[in-house]
Every structure is written in structure tokens, then in C-alpha cells.
Amino acid sequence: MATDVALSPGVFGLSAKDSNRIGSSFMPASDFQLIKRQERSNWLRLRTLVALRWFAITGQAVAILVAVRIFEVHVAVGQAALVIGIAVFANLIAYFAYPTNKRLSEFEASLWLVFDLVQLSLLLYLTGGLNNPFAMLVLAPVTISATVLHTKSTIVLGLTAIVLVTLIGLYNVPLGSSDGAVLALPLLFQFGFWVALLIGLVFLAFYARQVTSEMNAMDDALLATQLALSREQKLTDLGGVVAAAAHELGTPLATIKLVSSELKEELQDQPELLEDAELIRAQADRCRDILLSMGRAGKDDLHLRSAPVETVVREAAEPHLERGKDVQISVALQGGTALAQPNIPRRPDIIHGLRNLIQNAVDFSYSKVTVEISWSEERIEIRISDDGRGFPQSVIGRIGDPYVRRRRFTEDGARRPGYEGMGLGLFIAKTLLERSGANLSFSNSRKHGDAGWTGHPSGGAIVEVSWPRDTLQMKEIASNAPLGHNLPIQTWP
Image (cartoon, rainbow, N blue to C red; front, side, top):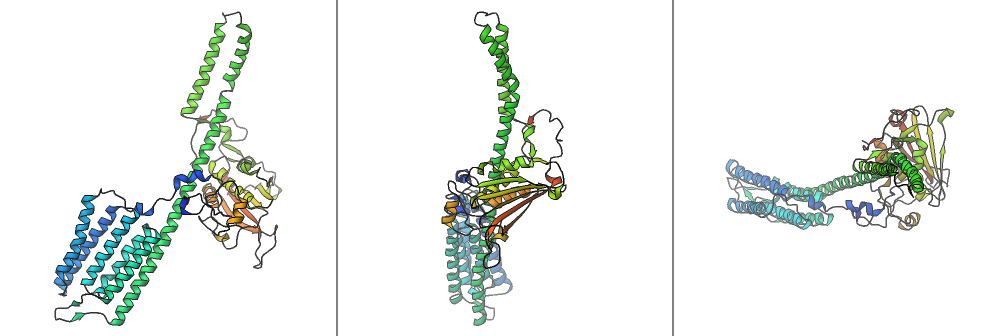
């Protein structure tokens, strides 16, 4: 079973050749060109670094004053003040030379963080090196880099920090007390502190990078989900407008047809039938007014608000019925009860979520996909299964997370010709369907294929979608009640 993430070229920075058994999405790659990953460094404002540097400058100055005045530690105050003054000067330049809302590029952010790292290292060199407990502050620039800059910049900054920490550990101006004694840690403690700083640099950078990457991936995935839902909402609204136009224009168009037929015969030599001609004009005006009204505000046909669950499922499966696979849709009652088929909302999130699941099954089936619909007094269930190789056991527990990847280019490219996915198919489907109140489960079946050497089933992916009936079924419109007038279109919550 193929498990690579499929992304359009340049989208999220991943290869367009990848594809994913658990992540295909029935959307053209061009639909997602608007959500290309922005440079994360562009999210960092210069004003943020300036504010943090003012805070650091204040802390450095206070620390030196306390050490000299209260603890009577001998420090090269003049040289330390010069180093602090350099930071003050840099802040003033940033404040007056650049707009306050300037966002830093990758290179600019890297330079500012390197400057902070070098300035702090110089100050530590003048104040005892690793004997100064404030040496741990070298972790800050590297951690900031890991959260906003690319990996390459973070590695460069981390290596720079390691070199500077090593140098100030070997070479520094020792601190002295009022009685002339040198304030220095034992050599073993200095070595341990050096090792701790190096481990802290690597660990914090890696930790911050992982957390930030997951947050960014989730943000990008949610953005793709919103665009998918927005696209489906527009298609649904368009369908409502078209249906409403056909419904509301039926009477005036029929009148125009009738009158025009009569006039065609009568007005050949009877110009006095001007009244009928005026009627044609009035009806034409009426058609124009209706079109203008629908074009400005839009009306949807209440018949399209809800439909039997089988109809909604068939609408979701329609784009994949002619793709060379046998897609069978069947209806079965749970427990043999004779319950009427429930009406459910024709909401775009439900249709698009089911469509993604069916598409995923069609993509990776050998020849057959089965969609089983059932309902009881408590629940409405849809079971989508295929005769393919099933979900990989290594990722089945993580299905629904964005960007679960396992590359298998050749096979997936052959199974999904003609379009490129986003690698977010099941994430989008799961998010949209859970938003509607559904519970989803993913599993494999032994029905098609043999178990592997691990004893796990290797064939036939199964996705089960289940809603509590009270949550999903349309209650406000009885099946035999009049629907009333069409209303202005309102988007679903």
C-alpha cells in the first residue's frame, strides 16, 4: 500500500512526485497555489528583536552593577560598558533606520541573531567566561532561530554558538573578589558546564524545531481544509442558484413561449395585438428582475438543503464512478428494522469529506470499491471498503494527521494518474466529517489478500463513518411538509 505524501509543486516545500495512500485529495494542484509556504523568517518582526534586546541590555547592565557595587567583584567595567553600548547603538540604528513594522528576511534575521550571540559572548569573555552563571543565555538566540528560521540557518547559528562557548571556556578574563582571590569553578565543573551548554543547545534547538514544524504543518493543513471547504461551499451555492433559477423562471418562460407562439401566427397582419406584445415585454422584464435578484443576493432551493442519505453518498461518489473501478453503493438496514431512509443535510463539508474517502478507496483499489449505507434508530453509518492492499500497519494509528509520509513514487504515480494530490486527503476528510459530528475509524480486512508475516491483515482498507442520528438527521423539515418560499443563501455554520 503506497504511503507517500502528494503535494503540488512548491506547496509546503515538498516534492510533487510524492503520493500518499492515506493522503490523496481530489483537488487540482492549482487550487492550492494560494497556500504556498511563506518564509517563516518573514514572520519575525524587527521590533520584536529590538524589544528583546532592550530587555537583555537592561539585564546585562543591572547584573554588572550588582556584581560591582554589592558583591564587590572585580570586572573590567569600562570594556563591559563598551560591549553593552554596542548593543544600545545597534538598537538605535534599528529603531531610526527601519520602520517599526519591518519583517526580517532569512538573512537579516540570521545576522541579527549572530550579532546578539557575539555580543553576549564578548560580555561573557570579559566577565569570567563559563564561570559566569549567565553563560546559559547563549541558548536564547539558537532557540529563537529554531522557531522562525530554516534548518540551515539554525545549524549555522548553533555551530557558531558551540564555537563561541568553547572559546570563552578556554579564554576569558577571570573574575576577582575584593580580597584579590580569583572566582573560578573547579576545572571539572567548568567542563561539566560546557558539556551541559552544548547538550542544551542541541536539545532545545531540536525540541523547538520539532514543535514549531508540527504547529506550522497543522496550520498549513487547516488552511488547505478551509480552502477545500470554501471551494465545495461555492459549488453547492452555485448548484442552489441554478436550481432556483430553473424553478423560478419556469412560469414566466412558459408564458413567453405561449404568447410568442400565438403572436407568431396573429401578428402577421394584425398589428393591433399590441397588448400581447406588451405582455411579452413585461414577462421578459420579470425574467430580468429575477436574474438580477439572484445575481445580487442569491436564493437557494430548499429542496437542495437536504436529501436522503443515499442521494448524498451518490453525489459524493459521482466524480469517481467512471474511473475504471467498480464502485458499488448499497443500502442495508441495521437489525432488519423497517425504518424510513433518513434525510441528512447536503452540507459541503459532508459531501467533500465523503468524496475524499471514496476517492482514496478508488485510487488504491484493484478493481472494486464498496460503499455500504445503513441506519438504525440511533445512528447513521457509511462503510467504505476496497479490494486493495490496505493501510500500512506502520501508519494506521496515525491516519488523520497531516503529512504522514512513506515514499513509494512509482506505484502511487501509476495508481493516481492525471492529477496531483495535496497529501492532506484523509486529514481534510477526517476534519470536515468530525466537524459534522461523525466518528471515523480506519482498519484493514482479510477479505482481500493474505495476512503478512506479522499476522496482520494486508488487504482491503476499510473506513467507517458514523453519526448519531439526532446530530445529523434534518428535523426541521418533515418529508411531507411544504417547503415554503426560497430564501436568500446562507452558508452553513
